[in-house]
Amino acid sequence: MSTSTAPGPRLTTPFGFAATTGDVLDGVDLGGRRALVTGGTSGLGRETARALAAAGAEVVLGVRNADAGRRTAAEITAETGNPQVSVLTLDLADLTSVRAAAEAYGDRPLHMLIANAGIMALPELTRTPQGREMQFAVNFLGHYALTTALHGALARAGDTADGGARVAVLSSNAHLFAPPVFDDLDFRFRPYHPLGAYGESKTADVLLAVEAARRWADDGITANAVNPGAIATNLQQHTGGLRTPQERRKTPAQGAATPVLLAASPLLTGVTGRYFEDGAEAEPRDAAPPLFGGGVAPFALDPGNAARMWEAARAFTG
Image 1: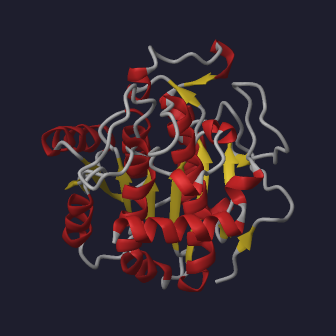
Image 2: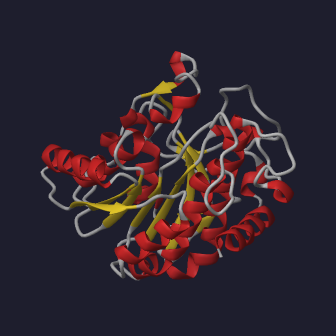
């Protein structure tokens, strides 16, 4: 399978800021394809799962709270008429839970993995049982561990003739203010900053997609990162709500549109190792933009940084 990786011409699609999941999947049949969406009980994760199910995909919700997951699965089935919505118990902060979830998933081919779950701006420095800073652990390390544990399932889907397997990793424009500090990823020497730690975790998420794209191209697996935009969800529970200017805000259906585009649209078959926002590959930045600006930082796409972050994650996760 041929792939298209950065650098190269900036990729655009017919879909922009206001596009919804319905627009992106109009006429797309996902029957016979399987998706795993982390954080699928609310916000962007729920809308992503609902949209994929509505297009005929089998959808697995990766969730911490199994009861909430089952309620959401039943709601999505009622809304879409698709009975193939199930629940996988997954706590991204706990590597034992991540490994158990991957084992429970088994060897079924996985066509779409949407690394959606996340936490933001924890007011106090908090660590996992393994001693990792919590935002870095949940937003990046847990998804790294899950994605690598499911490599075999993705590769089995990559053998198919319908475009292979896709990984879509949700990042944020917060990455633009947070180059990776490899010598102190856990804030053991630096003063802890809630939004700074969040931004670094989102830089790491981009690097996860970049390195997975490089390592797994021959397996028929593509991987891209995405900034979904500003959507009022539970993510902002520690920031006092969404602070983005009204004209830059999106509904959940608009926010999930670009993640769904990367995961399922035939327009992006074979595209890998890039960072998208508002339905298109993001413009490169040579300096931090205004607070609510977009684009992608060169340090987030740097192959050397991606390889180093992958090796750090391998060491941290054992």
